[in-house]
Amino acid sequence: MITALILGFAGSMHCLGMCGPIVLALPDKNVSLKISFYISRLFYNFGRVITYIIMGFIFGAIGQVISLAGFQSALSIVLGVLVISSLFLPLSKTMDFFTHNLLWKKTLGKLFRKKSYSALAGIGFLNGFLPCGLVYTALAGASASGDLFYAGAFMFMFGIGTIPALLVLSVVGKRSKVNWQGIIKKALPAMALILGSLLILRGLSLGIPYISPDLSNQGSKKELFIPQCH
Image (cartoon, rainbow, N blue to C red; front, top):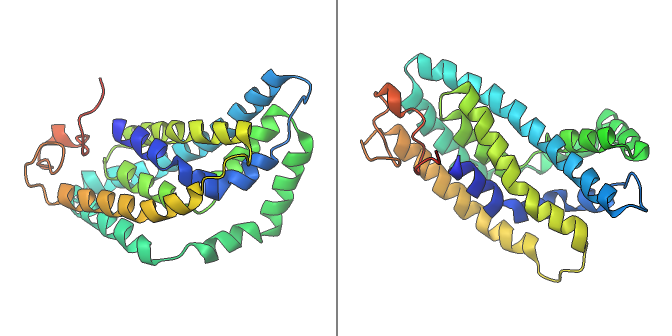
């Protein structure tokens, strides 16, 4: 779980570039109350987290089926290769599908006009489905666990890790002159390369604790990269 939290927190600056415009445009349920501002932003972020958990369950279920079939090592290697390969596959076309989809834009527009807490959660929920290399990287790590519920918890922790940066952005707005988006764009390929390499090493089952455990041992299926927090 620590892996997911670190991935979310370390990559959260990327969220500022991808989701920043939406965060800055979020409506406020009651502009006269500061507490309402913070609550509304929490509802938005937890809407995103719910989406990540759902995707975690879906990908975790797929990983669990593959793991039970005895192909967990192969799954980990394939996911590692896909994560590294994603560095060379732009997401612009997939992003255009969402941003130019009339139903998606119409639904999002209605939610923005409502200004209720549930609407803000709905905005976050829809935003969670936007194409994002960071989210896909987290899903690869979650599904490699071969456990449906662990994958859901993994994505929950990942989502929690992304919240602080977006909350700070909500407060400071565009005041910061630091080009965080440019910095993270340069750092993300390195993060994806590291995680992809770790997934491949894990699939090789070299018997190295936390890095490449013996996946033939049923008790090691959740031993993902670094010691877990108990």
